[in-house]
Length: 150
Image (spheres, rainbow, N blue to C red):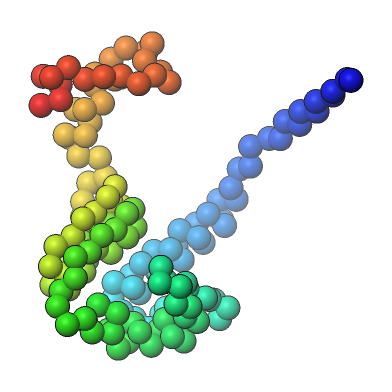
């Protein structure tokens, strides 16, 4: 039996600079509207077909999402401050909730940086040096010595 394999090489898609700027501007407007709890701005940004599904399998349409934002029932309606957990953008939201006193404690895992925080702190850059000092380490796992780990 003969097996033939076909390989197609596609060129990498390059984003249209105009579209990329529009998307970044919309994301920034969305972030600002969420932080300011600006329901009117969110209403303009969000699609009328929006369906948000919670981890509890509760489904909300655009109107329900905007109503919950206006009424503050999501976190402020809880009797005692919850323990909050978030990953990536959820980690950034967690930090905002804790800053507003809406949580007892929080665990942020690989949190996205909030405004005013440097994306790459010096301590993180320092941890890269043992890995980057040898070009042969490319695509390899590199262990740290005890001194480097401290």
